[in-house]
Image 1 (cartoon, one colour):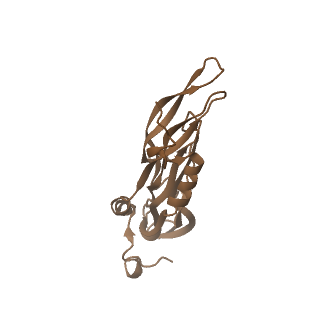
Image 2: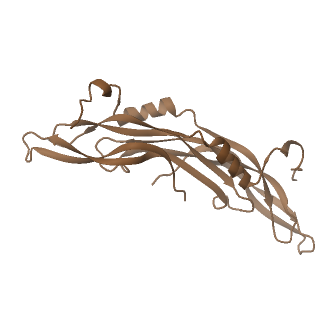
Image 3: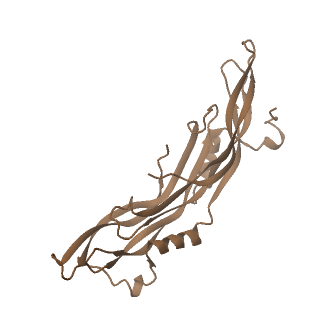
Length: 126
Length: 126
């Protein structure tokens, strides 16, 4: 048996998935944050002196939602859904020179990808 | 040229990805939230009277992080990473009976998946 959805305790329930979508977007999803923080890392290569570099890492809380659409039996297909991931947005490649005493060549270069900036970014959902 | 990472402004930078991982986990990632809220939905079928049901939808902010590991050139492989998604955790199937005047049969049953509870859940990353 279905309750009377127009009266009583159900009066304030959000009507329809489009409205829920709008509510979600406007009211709650502005507070997401994603921090970019510095991190020391060691670059190693066999027979070479290790070197420390500054990289960055990301952490935070990003928005996500899942709103079923009316009339869709299978929720996985029939839904507004979105998930955001706090991850590197801007990266760069740097070349680190390592000293390798007694080796030939005495210098080795290593290319390392470095994070410059993190951001909440939409994740592909399947 | 690499700066001297043991002194000055780099003294307080987190050392190594394992430490960054621990810091991220313990300090920042406890505040995630994922709300389950009610939503009215309409169940329709051609030639039948529509019915409203109560479903639920999910929204919130879940933890995610991306920490590069030392010595890995390709960040996509060499990283501790995790992303959580505010989505249905518990669902159930309900049967909605629709009245279809002038049709044969006069009653149609529709099975609808309903959200019971939402939660931040780990998302598979590729």
